[in-house]
Image (cartoon, rainbow, N blue to C red; front, side, top):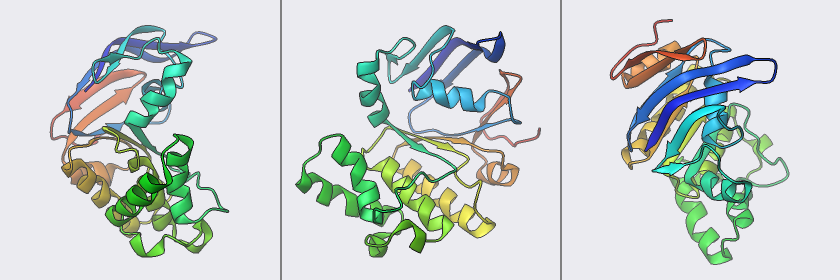
Length: 226
């Protein structure tokens, strides 16, 4: 599903963000990517969504080499990937339904298709009864559920969750992780990028640890020990 072959990313000024990274993530896995700030986690996400390109090496998603992907192909790639950010990036003047449907509208989906899909994903994240509310009428946990729904609406094969619980309390954190596990049970590959040691250790799923731009640990049922 996701393969990195000797991937290195060097920024101007000779700053090495990733150094000779080799990874293979199978379809349907739930993988936590952990490490201290500045270890390359953010750069890895940027490479996966083609916001950046590797300096060296090859990056494949579903057998598609995206190492030198053209600008015209990036929108298609991003419809295969759902991305969840820590800062919700919701449109405050749009309702929950409109925030989720906007991603489909941009992609040119029909009104009929939109009104079919959006209620389905809102039910999955437990917001079926709050589709007409605005972001400022929701709790932080509910806003993050809207973000998850928006990432799901294209039915992506992979969800990349970048610190999705970073701004949430322990109760909302548990609920969001529960939703991600539920999505994973449908067969979607989940990449969880997090600093939250408690979440990672509770999941007891595969843990990949980055340090100084390199993979220093890859445990199938590991713990976050750094």
